[in-house]
Image (cartoon, rainbow, N blue to C red; front, side, top):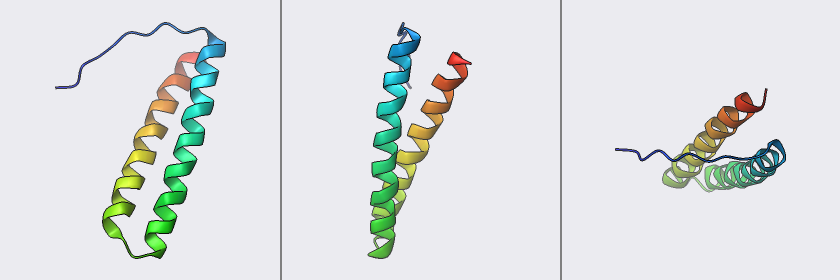
Length: 66
């Protein structure tokens, strides 16, 4: 079971969170590329899933700002 939390942010704070998430996601995407180049399928899967989850969260936050 996933626990939900409520968080109140200003638009500027939400933008800061989005910037941090974007930077984090870029790191996971790059790590997945490196793992793919090394034929490390387990790491490709792990890093790709992390990037996808970050992307989904970013989209949810952006939708709240629109």
